[in-house]
Image (cartoon, one colour):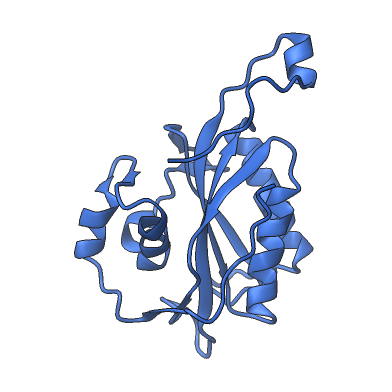
Length: 191
């Protein structure tokens, strides 16, 4: 069960009468360039510092062979974080892109190129989006064990919107290129 922020806290939106629902969001983190763990931890810390975002859990970290990546490419470190947020999905996406930029993310033309940091929105509540700026749920989440396995670790009963139970999707995916890293973990300050 996920803890949600205190509903009795008064903020500027409450004073103006604007209502923003709290939504659960799943974000996938990945890095295969530079200080991989430091980049993932930096993303968690940056998300935690974002107004109207509350991190509720972080998955174990997995080391994953790159998929459809140009050669040569180092292994990724991957994790998933669960958040509660009142931010609109596009604002949350903008924040994720800003965090990537802060960690010197380069976006070459070549798809799946190595990167210092990737922060992907997988789901934001039950929101669906299919435009140029945002597609929800993430269009490739159902074929990415490096997203679904860490999510499943946090929520064994999770359901990927429009695809089904994560456990059932995982049963049909090849996880052989993944290894859980028992020696490292992401630090959360949930105080």
